[in-house]
Image (cartoon, rainbow, N blue to C red; front, side, top):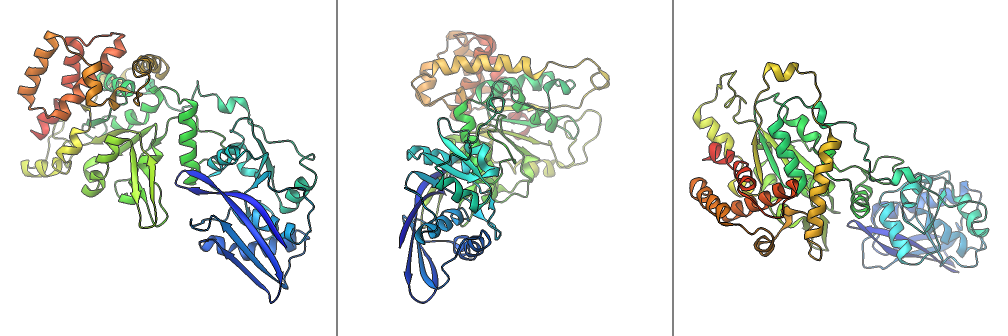
Length: 512
């Protein structure tokens, strides 16, 4: 007899529908799965057989069982097909009585005792099931809150194969759909554990970070060990605007398909902060592998990617970021398929000015030779450095700053100014593909960053004095526009441009 059950699978960060077809015929026992299954899917044969038996159902151990996962031309991965395969076998052997399985979507991994285990990628699967107009989605209990984020869609949490059969036979009358606490979906007050007020001194760096957050600009901090670079970077997400629902769903999908979503989390409410170690590989940073998965730059989507000790990263690892920094996406090509992952992140880098770290420190003498310093700085290529908008020096704190007891400005106060600046940009860029100043194209620069005579004269001096490239000049214009937005000004004035120019002077001092 033939039975069909609907399920779904992950491709990239999205899900696509999969139909599980089971045909059982008389003949010598065989259990075959076709439709390009990977090893985990092939191994479901043993899990399904044990789960059906231990759930007090009868497994057709004397018949020929053929399972087809359609469409058959896309490789299927993972254990999520265990539950739909088991239900299809029970339907094909007439052990369950369901009017129509066409209305439902099922996913879940089975344990040998018949219990249902959680899977990855539940949010995109729920979005796919709703797009197919399914009446209900049956998911492992540990994934239910994540799937229930999808509005106006019935999601049922199941714990065992037996419970699944009972729900299907009773048309879901024995259980209420899963619900999410509304407070878990409140994005207006992200629950950060740290605050800008924790940082002593470094007011000029805090100002630079406020500008970076307001326009989505990349930033590099250069200073001796212990000056607070890492502490500042970790607090940058706390002053960025709250996630929108669209952004929160995109980030949650990425963390869900990569298996990084914290347990019992319905929706990520805070901006991502990723800080990979300098030994990270190309695939670890940008994504990849035999079955491509999102890398660190994609997990930092709509958030911050922090690279501490930047010169210690491999040169080839750093260079692969150049294209994602420009495009906001990363494309991974394989012989069988090509996947594109989002990578719209803020790059925040930190480094010492020399191998010993004390080249610019007035209190401690540097022990490096001129050649060692030059070799250390040259680990950062000019093209990558040119893509970083703000270059800021982070000096050692003096004793008065270290002993000061008064807290600094809170993240809430800074975030209010940053959010107001972003709202001005959203209004300005309505009808365009941009949502922050960093993303402006050359054409948009000409339209939104018009300069008066005094500002143009200042820019000419800066180009001549610092030898600015065309890209560096464009980035100064974007910074000027952001500084004006923070001030609530429609026009770029001389003091806006002057502040933007000084954010691009440090690299000329150190790199020449």
